Image (cartoon, rainbow, N blue to C red):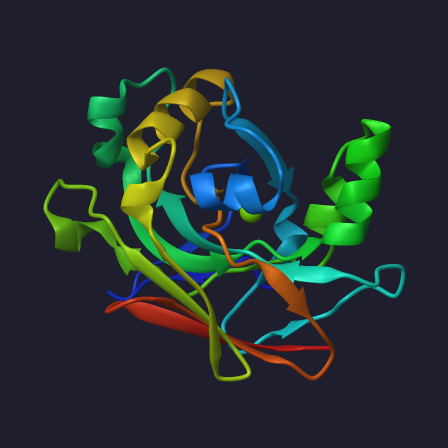
Amino acid sequence: MNFTLKFDNGNSIEIGSIFCIGSNYSKHIKEMGGSKPDAPVIFLKPRSAYLENGGVIKIPEFSDLCHHELELVVVIGKHCSNIDKNESYKYIAGYAVGIDVTLRDIQNSAKQKGQPWAVAKGFVTSAPISQVISADRFEGKIPYFELRLFLNGNEKQHGRTRDMERSVPELIEYLSKVFTLNPGDCIFTGTPEGVGQIKKGDKLVAELVGFTKIELTVE
Ligand code: MG
C-alpha cells in the first residue's frame, strides 16, 4: 500500500493518523437533520483508507449507499501538543482536498445503535487525498479555500472554508490537546452541504480551487 503524501514543491511525507471532523458546516448539519455539537465531533480513519490521485474507490459489497463528502485536508508538519490556536499555523505542512467517503447506510445504522463509525468511515479507499499544497506559499497565514466536487461532470458540492463552524486553528488547538499531532497526520475538516450518492462506474473530481484537484473512479 502507498502511504506517501506528495507536495507541490517536491517534498513528500509519510501519512500518519487521519483525524476527521464531523458536523462542521451549518448547511450540512441541516441537511443531515442534526444540530451544532457542543464540542468538535472527531473520528478517525486508518492509514489503509488513504487513496491517491487517479485511484479507485471500492464500495464494499455490504453497503448499498455510499456518499461523497468534499473536504479540506490539513497536513501537519511538526509534533504539536497543547498549542494555542494562534500558534497553529507553525505546525501546518500543507493543504489538500480530500473526500471523506462514507457508507451512509452503515453509518445511519451505527448511529441508531450508538455504535462507532469505523466501518462506515474507515474502509479501504475511504480517504482519497490530493497532492499537498505547501503551507510555505502562504507566509504564516492560514488561508480560506474554495472547494468544488464534480460527479460525472456535474457540480455537486461547492463550499468555502470560511463557513466552517470551527476554524482550522481551533481544530488544531483541540486535537493537539486531546491526541497530540505529529508529522504526516491529516485532518479532514468536515464537509459543506450537497453530499450525495456515488455508484460503480462514476467519475469524481474534487478541487481545491486554484491550487490542486484529485480525480477518482468508483468500483
Ligand atoms: Mg466528513
